[in-house]
Length: 342
Image (cartoon, rainbow, N blue to C red):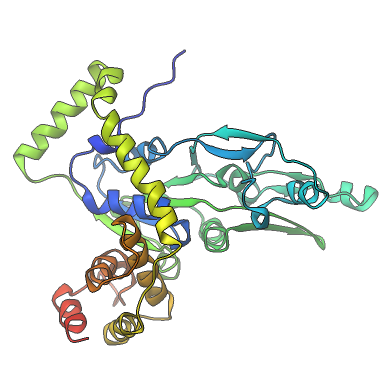
């Protein structure tokens, strides 16, 4: 049976902030993922699945359950690292980035993997059964209805996303493997919210709604019908745009390594966080990282104030302090005023 063709990312109408947030996280997974809030039928899952199709195949160690990057010796799993240190040539293969979906019912063991303690005690060998985080390494980890997921599992996901490593410890035995992935959580706010402590751990967040412009809604209908009538023909129409965007993302990854930000802009972000009463330092750091990624995506090697402003729109709204029974809201006029004074 032929695999169903994926709707092209560049064919999605509107939802610019959502698309930008996803692209930024693929360029720079260190941003910490994105939480997409919105009503049903707003292309949330379509955009996530389409994102992986943008990128060219990547090199991986052949036969490795974590599909380690042979060009990153510091990010190899234990088995690949042992071979590398012995001077063994790591066999390579080409794989495509994929979307790994995490079911709401997933247990912690299913997510992080399990250690065979009996094997470790009797034979002194670590036997690890890989979990979802192993599959997610170098891929996109997609959690639909993340607000319905057990808080402890969400904690584990966010820890791994922040560290790029998954560590499993049982009875004094531990095993670590690379878990560098793009975390994308989607949710419908009508079905409940996420604890503020967990909300803050997401790098970016966006709110999506249905299009209110009749012409755009018509375009959504036309494109969807054309896709369902002949998916291959529809995809071919956007092939060139897809390739251009994919190449732009790959180039941005390289540019990002050389992007710089001035002390003046660092001070502007710190002042903004203080004035808005944002807790902790995660907001400041993520705003700077996002601004640097925006600059790289624009093929610039220096961050400008507009990058800071655009980053703030994605980083700060879900971090605003909330009173009971109220939504935290970002006063954009106040943000502009503070940054324009710097």
